[in-house]
Amino acid sequence: MKKEYRIKKNDEFQKVFKRGKSTANRQFVVYVLKKEEQEHFRIGLSVSKKIGNAVKRNEIKRYVRQFFLEVKDEIQKGNDYIIIARKPAAEMDFHEVKKSLIHVFSRANVLGKTKIGNSVKNKRMQGGKSG
Image (cartoon, rainbow, N blue to C red):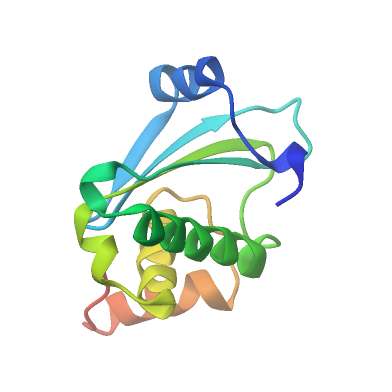
């Protein structure tokens, strides 16, 4: 990810934690802080040592970054996002991570009205299991 799309500094993380809204499912917690003056979104990743060794933590971070690359046009601009991985995320492959992130971002109402966001909503309406 380009530098302007990343949140790296601790005080920026703390600002999102304190002022942002959180949404969660079993695998991820997402904090969203609206920033109207910002023309693009930024993401910060937090994967604890409790989740696994460095290889596993880096794999999860790669999966999350890949998710953002694939859905960057559908994610609301002008927001800061912090994604915190929970323990069950360590057992997931990329497609499961993507499905879980789509679910949590849909719950946070920051996923655009596209085929990605609607596929999760349609499954819920049809009684399908998601997340």
